[in-house]
Length: 426
Ligand SMILES: *Cc1c(COP(=O)(O)O)cnc(C)c1O
Image (cartoon, rainbow, N blue to C red; front, side, top):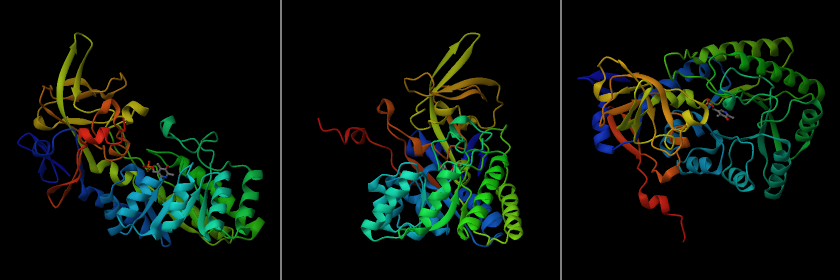
């Protein structure tokens, strides 16, 4: 994906300096080849290796019409979590029978939109949602396939803010016999539902399999209990996403096989031992598909040296185009793209231009001595960068370019100043 030539960083054969000249900075750049390589790993290590499985891209990581179309062509499913994401999928003509709908507070409008478009399955996140959805189904003469998102009560080895499987999590139905079993019984009897099974998502940026495997045990117990109590074979199990990627050299990500092989082996063994029908198994990775396929380009502006302390290197974007460092201390690596082969003998902090002291994109970056006007390329920004972009300080959201067949294609244009006041009435 990356090569340097004449001291310049290239992405799939396209010069980052030319990209910055043509489209301006800040700029999001994606490699379609890299997205396809990531999809291929999921295909070979999961979909083709194990029958009766599917993979849904967690759209929230980077949700655009382009991405929905690509995932559709590649035969993947998508997972949406809001009316806006569903709307994007609809505009991309994404087939409803490969859409799942997640989220802990789907509004009536969103649920109706999903029923209307005929999304294949809804992951019910809590008890009140179940009753609400049932009412809407009855009123509209619909029957939907549902899964229960379970809070598996596992903690994961990741930043607290992206751990989602703990007992006190806002996500999922509590792992409590008095809540769960009556709910399963109710669902099985309801004319509004086809009950598919269970879902968990234990956290994000996971670099080991511990939490997936402990959560799996919870699901296996539930599967068996559902069979014993209600004589019902679970049809579907969704292991969520969260498969970690490499942001900096200190990350040692696993492959998809490292996660799915032990899960599938344990699942198959458990079903054999207990005479259960092995359910359809699905996953919903986001960053694994898109994270390392994207970089961001920034122009370096003012440089502030505090003698004997540190050097701040400011760029023309920041927490408005990449919120993750400010939000939960996410770490990134970067390179000065117009000095790509020069020795890295400076250590600097890359700061954004927003009026917040947490707007520091990278702390202690080792790089070539930066100068105003240099181009900074930040790696692995494909997930949750553009997706979380915002207009704080009335800064415009940057454009998105995809490199495909060694050519750049603009897929999202830069916001204009008029876009920033478009909805203002007075
Ligand atoms: C965020 C999320 C995912 C994807 O997480 P990644 O870390 O991007 O793989 C999958 N499922 C659910 C329910 C999520 O909330």
